[in-house]
Image 1 (cartoon, one colour):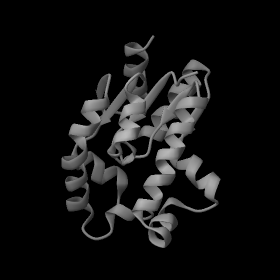
Image 2 (cartoon, rainbow, N blue to C red):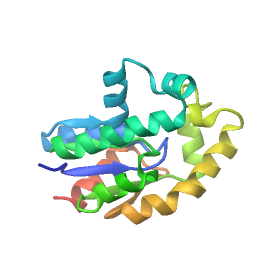
Image 3 (cartoon, rainbow, N blue to C red):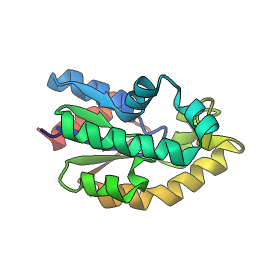
Image 4 (cartoon, rainbow, N blue to C red):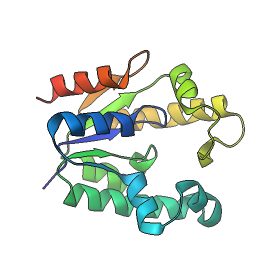
Length: 166
């Protein structure tokens, strides 16, 4: 068993929204590793970061990704930082991975003030820029396909992915 597609990208790329659209179009289940972590711990991601630290969250995230890749055959959306762990990148080697690329301006608009996003405490725009600069090469390294999301609706992004993966 393996996901039909794995969506990766930074916060604000639209992974969760596009995953839902793809799942509905293909008639397959949708899974989001951030939601899995929240359901499994009974805590919000932001609370885990604050109370237990980023390292603890990343451990939970790596386990959630590993379980989802092994158990799920629909559309899988990963948290923005999941690809930072080498073991997660290794798991993605044999998967169909779509990187939803978003530019700084669109990411800032979509994320807003970052409420509930622990990595954005402080200057939201500069933090998003730093995350994009750090993570974009990693997203590209695991991607089978790259889909641009700037100035596009989630429906347009999902339609392109459906064309890429008939």
